Length: 392
Ligand code: PMP
Image 1 (cartoon, rainbow, N blue to C red):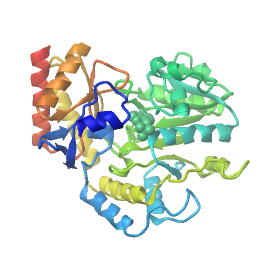
Image 2 (tube, protein in one colour; image 1 turned 30 degrees about the vertical axis):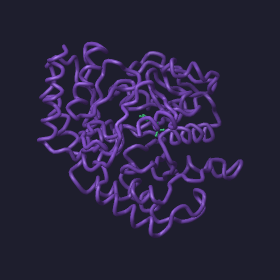
Image 3 (cartoon, rainbow, N blue to C red; image 1 turned 30 degrees about the horizontal axis):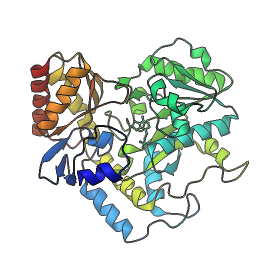
Image 4 (cartoon, rainbow, N blue to C red; image 1 turned 45 degrees about the horizontal axis):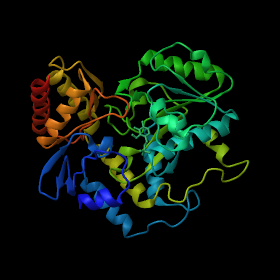
């Protein structure tokens, strides 16, 4: 099957991991040659409740038996969408009261940028160096890494990149600015949390000049950082909040949330100025509703903090430069690319899936499912320690 995969599936890398997946359950992925892997990256921050959580699977089955796609977005009343939207917004700050449902993270970014431009009537956008917001043209335009942008220039004009966690150049955010877009915890940039005071200054500056603040919580959302969204931990409320990844419990869905007043601008001049055929697909929405209900009713979100404490107390100072991040969105900064590669490879040989982030070559990404039990967590951390010792 690997040959056919290499032959017929368009490749984006010279070295795909190439696991031949048979099935997946809880924290494990099983391969066709009957190996078991601990998924310690959760399909990159997706399966936070583990693979095939029974509540999610049940909701999918139920919805499949009722209806699949019936109409383009926003025309028909579809219960899974409404249920999810109500539960989500009732757990967010008051002004984040409506959600526009899409299919993916990058579509959430695209929608948020368009919404900010339409609402403010401005076009200037501010992003941050080393950010990542998705791979479609609008998202790439605000992604702060030249090697990924350069092959696709020209991108959106009037986009400016500031240093993350720096108050220098905040006057770039001015009366022409439609939005400042940022990840409160940079994911692909190397798991870098924003400083709380800095985030507050950004919020303040946006308010001063009437620019909207967009949080991309596509990676940090749904309990991963120890609060439902990272914004809850920071106590800073954006005007638009983007989400995806863990939202559907393994099904494709994304969304951007804002106020009713801001969303009004999608209704007029012209009407229907942001539509999607499949956004908020009923099966994905049913999965998202079941996933969110479960996430809020169990102790998963607190578990993210326990995971952080365990990882820090086990690994910090043991040949690792730094343990960074929040909750179960963590990174291990190592001394070199060589070491990072070797540690990831050694763990892979032990049946543990780790990875790195797009913009950093010296960081091991840890994003375990929040359902991981203590014994398994210990096992993985021990394997990491052993590998670091061996190759340091
Ligand atoms: N924003 C962030 C912060 C992300 O981590 C990602 C995915 N890595 C995206 C946007 C894009 O999401 P998607 O791959 O679903 O388009």
